[in-house]
Length: 502
Ligand code: C2O
Ligand code: CU
Image (tube, rainbow, N blue to C red; front, side, top):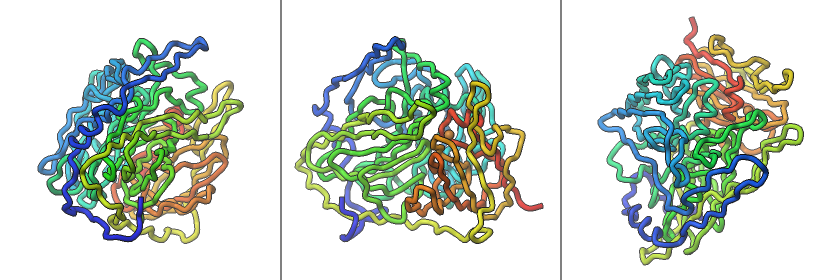
C-alpha cells in the first residue's frame, strides 16, 4: 500500500463506506470450506479437542456502545464458551470468548458490574486506559470472590485519546489461568458523534477487532493443565485464535481497505504477524496513533500490545495471515520458539464495486516527549530478576516478589521520570505499567522507538530499555509487571504509588 503522496483522507471524510454486510456477503459464499488439518498427538499426552469449525467467516464479539455519556455493563465471568466451533468449558464473559467489545467516548463513564461465577477470585483491569486506579476505578487490588459481584466506576477523561484498549482479569495468582482460559475482551475509545458499524476516525471501508488468544483444550472440552516448566517459560497454547475462531476467513473485496485492531491477548506469546501478498500499514500502537504510518512486512506485538493496521486488499484470492515463529529466549534446553502458525485467511473477492485508489493515511497528531526530570539521567532503575530457589525458578523484580502491601516505587504527581529497565536473564519480558503510558527513549535492540505513548514494551533477554514516563495525572496506587502473565502471577510485579507532594 502506498503511504506517500496524494490527497490524504481525514477523520470524518464522507466517501460512503462499503457496508460490512455487503463485504461479508461477497466472500462468505465459498472460498473456504473447513478442512481441519489437525494433529492428534501420538506422544502419550492427552488427546486434544479438534476444532469443530475452521475457515468460518470472521465474527465480531457483541458491541456494547455507550449512550449519553455512559456505558452500563453487566459482565459475568463463567465457564462455558464456544471455542473454535466447539462447545467447551473455556471461560467466558457473558457467554463469549473474547467478551463483548466495550465502546466508550472520551468523557464517558463506564459503570461495570463484574459477577464472578468462577471457582476462584477474579477482578478486572482496563488495560491501557488512562484512568484512576483508586477505589472502584481501574484498581488491580480489587478481589471479587466466587459468587460475588463488584461494581466498577471508571471515568474516562475528556481528553482521553481514541484508540484500541482491552480488558482482562488481574487477580494476582489466578490471572494467567483465567486469561488463558478465555477471559479477555476489546475496549475501544471512539470519537464523539454518530457512528455506524465502523468506529474509525481514519477513513476505511471496514473496522474490525481481532482479539488474538491462545488456549489448549483437552478432548473433553476442558482447558488443558499447564506444567511448571510451561509456566516458567510462559505457557503457549496449541490453538491460536482470532475472536475465538480457528483459522477464520477475513473477507474483503479487491481494493477495499480495512482497519484491523489487533489485540495480543495471549498470556505469553509474542505475535509476529505477516500477511501473504500484502503489506501491513501500522497506524497505531497501544491506542496511540503513530507519528506516521509504517508500511511493514510484519507487525510485532508483545503480550498486551495492540496494533492498529490498515490493510488494502490486493487482487482476488486467499492469503494466509501467519503468526511467525518468535524466539523469546530459552531455559536450558527448553526453547520458547514454536513453528509458524496459520492464524487466518484473508479472502479477497473480485467485485464490480469501483475499487478505491491507494492513498496515504494522515493520522491525528501525537503528544511529543518532554524533557526528563533529571536531564540525561535515569531517575529509577528496575531489574527483572530470575533465580533458582531449590527446584523452582523465581520470577521477581529487583529481587523481590510481588507484595500488595508494599510500595516499591513512590512517585511525586507531576513528575516526568526516566526509567531504565534491565534484564540480565535468558527470557524476554514484556514490561507493562498501569495508568501512566510511557515513551520508549532507547533500547538495547537498537530499533528506533515509536515516539508515541505506549503501555507495553518488550525488554529483551540480556538487554535493556530506557523509558520516559509522565506522571501528570491520575494519582493513586497501581502496578507494573511482566505481561507474561505466568511471570507476573509468580511474583514479577511491583507496586507504584503516585501521590502529590506533602
Ligand atoms: Cu494487561 Cu497489569 O495488565
Ligand atoms: Cu516475564
